[in-house]
Image (tube, rainbow, N blue to C red; front, side, top):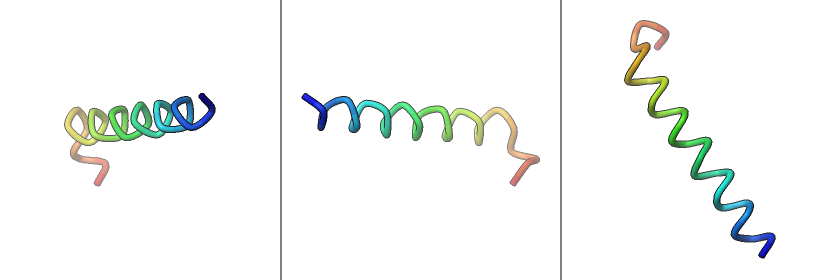
Length: 28
């Protein structure tokens, strides 16, 4: 159960990271 929570948080973080990269490319 804890493993799934950690994987979910990591996946969510990567999703937000990619979305931020797509929305604000000038920050790179």
